[in-house]
Each structure stands twice: as C-alpha cells, then as structure tokens.
Image (cartoon, rainbow, N blue to C red):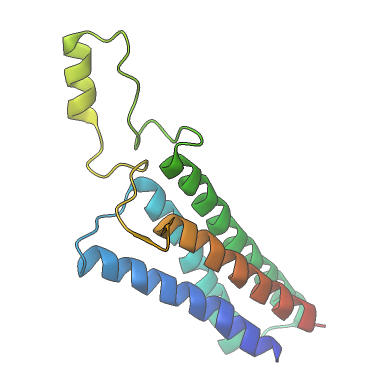
Length: 158
C-alpha cells in the first residue's frame, strides 16, 4: 500500500468515527458526556492533518511532521478512550465534573447541592454498547488501528 492509502485509511477512519458520533448524538438522541467530546477533538485534528498532507504540496520534513502529528492525534484519542472505558467500568474515578461523587457523610443540603450540580450526561455510565464494549472502548480500539496506519504512512515517507 502507498503512503497516501494509509493516510486515507487513518484520516478517513477518524472522519467515519466523528460522523458516527454525530449521528448517535443528533439522530439517535444520545447526548455525549464531557469525555466523549474530548475524544472527538483529536479525530478532528487527524482529519485536518490528513487533508493537509494529501492536498497541499509540502516538503518531506513538513510531511513527516504532519504524519507524526496524525499519529499523536490517534494515540491521544485512544488514551482518552481507554481512560473513559476505565471510568465507565468503575476501574478508577473520572473527573468530578462528569461522574458521581461519594455521598458518605453528606448533609441533606450538601446532597441536594450535589444532585443539582450533577452533569446531565455522566461519564461513568454506558449509554450504548456493542459486543460488550462501549463507544469509548470501540473508539480506543479503532484509534489504535488508525495509529498503526499513521505509523505506516510515516514509515513510507522516506
């Protein structure tokens, strides 16, 4: 496969995941949590980076830099997806701004304040899953594959 084929697979895969996330949100009615939004930004960056490499005439050094940035974007969203998966599974706590806090030792007023300030969409709940994996888990796995594609494109940028 050529360098451009790997770039198309990586950046196109990010585009497909982003379109899928928007479809789940706008057509399926599944509002994203804060961590879901965090996972979208690196995909957006990967799409832009892939378009730049494919559409703009650049020197070899710039191409390598952009391909490395694409690899970093894919790994970044994979790490966020992995972290989000752990939060969903209860392996570790997530950010207090999007997960449930402890209610131990709280007064009624403190409990009411926590309820009223709770996010509408929590990061520690799985709203959808396929084959036992949440969207965050699927994003992590797909993004690791995209990272391999970016690495292969970088390897061919000699």
